[in-house]
Amino acid sequence: MNPEQLLQVYVLSLGIFLISVAGMELIAPFTMFQVWRRWVSHRIFPLYGVSLVIMGFPLTQYRHADIPAIGYVVFAIGLVVVFSGPFILLYPEKIRAMVSEIAETAGEDGVRRLVFIDAAMRLIAGGVFVYSYFA
Image 1 (cartoon, one colour):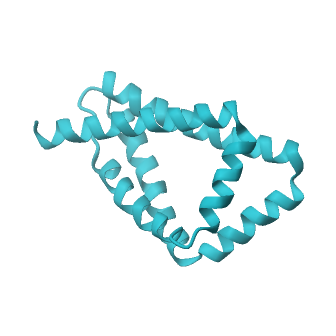
Image 2: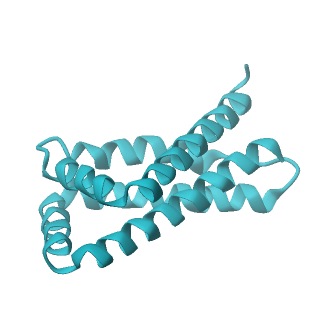
Image 3: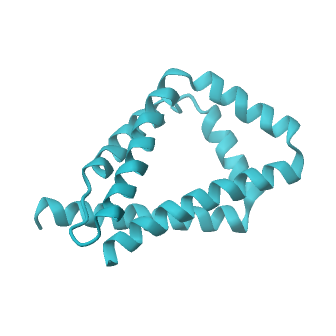
């Protein structure tokens, strides 16, 4: 496999993963929110920022030969992922406080809406990734 094919398989795999997580969020939004609360509270959570940079960087290198617009969308998603990593790395306490505040003030309906919005974003990104592989 050449590097371009590896990148295509990476984007496809990431798309399938994102769609799977979005499906779990749609099926069990409260459980997924609790998973997020536990993950944000974990002491190694700041390393998630490093992993976002590492996992997002290949997306910034993606090019689609037949449909350049798809490549631009994947590139833009990659930039968002890469640039969000340092914020998590530098400000994990602010993110922890935000998640705790949401849990206390949003109520069940608010939490459900936020998880559904997150699921929609994951479905869109995952759908773009999977489509880019098969297009």
